[in-house]
Image (cartoon, rainbow, N blue to C red; front, top):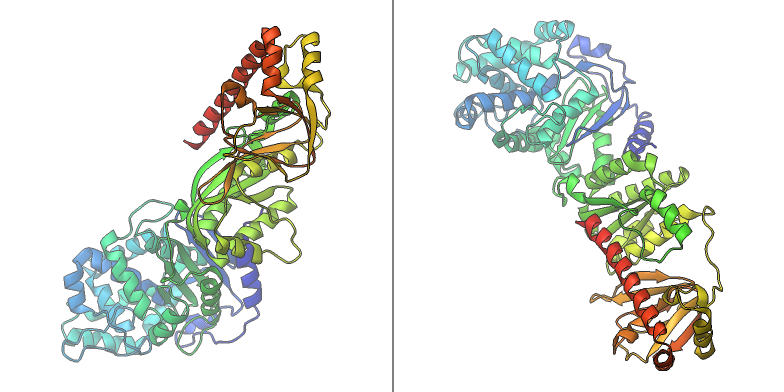
Amino acid sequence: MQSPIQAYLDNLHARLASVQDGELANYIPELSKADPSWFSISLVTMDGMVYSTGDSEQRFTIQSISKPFVFATALADRGVDFVTAKVGVEPSGDAFNSISLNPKTGAPLNPMINAGAIAAASLVAGDSPNVQWQRILGSLSAFVGRDLDMDEDVYRSESDTGFRNRAIAWMLKNFGIIDGDPMASLENYFRQCSLLVDCRDLAFMAATLANGGMHPITGRRALPAEHVERVLSVMATCGMYDFAGSWLYEVGMPAKSGVGGGIIAVLPGRFGIGIFSPRLDPKGNSVRGIEVCRHLSKDFGLHVFNRAGEPGMALGRIYTAAQAPSKRQPSPEMRSYLHDHAHRIKYLCLHGYLAVDGVEYVIRRMIEMAVDSTCFILDMHQVDGISESAARLLNDVRLRFARDNIAVVFSRIHGRSVIKHFLSTTSPKTDRGYLSFEDNDLAAEWCENRLLGDSVPTIEGPVGLADCVMLKGLPPELLAQVEQVATVRQFAQGEAILTAGQSADGRVFFIDKGYVSILVPLQDGAHQRIASLGPGMSFGEMVLLGQTARSATVVADCKVECWVLAADDIDRLARDAPLLRITLLQNISRDMAEKLKRATHWIAALA
């Protein structure tokens, strides 16, 4: 099944592909040869999952997107104090090729403009320009996760036409910012801008920054963690040049653009995003790229100042209905079938505040398990909240699974109207499949019924007292005496047959037709179903062991008919026939042992 994240990116790409605004960069002749229709979007998660659409394998030159990574390399090689003495971190508010220098020191205002980037290229480790170039190449390759190549034609075109940059380099030399030959550092700057990448490479570079400097796939540290926040801070305030303020306000992600048509955006701890489309606006930013980021930020709630958490923390325990079946008492045929097939019902316990990245992780795990699943129960008990975009993704994946005949249901949302509101209102108007259960047991039984289908016949009743579990083993003549003193009671659907806390009136109930739920009230006003009983089962029998108050509420799930025995009648019969009491107590003990065994399975599944 296609991920909803992938479907979203495909749809977004299709919608924005028609945008024809902007022009190709022409001040570097080679860049004007790009196909203006090229367009791709890539997104990489913190565990290395890649979502890509469009021309994701089309290579282009990285251009100014190299700047934050070379600045990062200089920080790692020379330290903060040395680098910031040569290159500032203040927004310039000017175009990328502006000559923005501190009037007192001559230092470039920040490393994202050309002056600062040329200075940063001169600051990386190496006792010669060639060694410095190898360091730059190796560092950027580590961020990408593979060895990079350089486009010689673009490099030569940049070098042959870079007169303004040559003037900047000599000014930096004049102020003592660059030591040695400034033209050698400038050539390294031209080379770094001419490195070939594709859209996925950009997303991996962004994801490595988002991952604290560690590449999500290779596990190689590309940048010491203490420098990541410095690099992201400069990207946030200076990465989009004289559009940086509006960008941070509208989109809210540290980013960097390049005149080759690329943009990277970083959501720390969550995503790395790369976009490639060579049509540029007057500020030198990709027109489609900016629109992509605007949509992603709005639709997925990716603004850096939004609430966020570790994506993997959204998903806790995963277990199956084979480990934790519903608490109904199944027939032998049902028990056998569920023993073989209940593993196809999966519980997923969700945690914390659910944002898009956390839900993306949950969905990915569901897709991995889908081949062996018929139902997913999303336990929302530990969920603090959910964003509207995350709820939309959950509903999207639920509908996609439904087309593959896999059900996705929710449980334990009790008392959190905001979560329920988002999950229900983001569901399409034509959808009638949204299901939310009060507790996991109700959800599990619904899923079991769906799994059973027509494979195992259900008991409709009547079954008679002879088939009741608590009376198994009674000789026929003694069973006949019990039938003579029993009365028949009928209960409507939803009727409370017994209520927790009420005085025990000495009645024991044997179900002839229908099903009942045994409910224990919780402090928050919700309830927990501890059992579901059907024909042949009994309830209220604890009065025979001296119970004076009902410990649970029993509710008729449908129209129910019961045989009812008074404890006094049982005592009277047992005085003349002790085998009756012995048989009842043996069966009660056997039933309690079975319930304890099932409870142990539940505890093991949840541990």
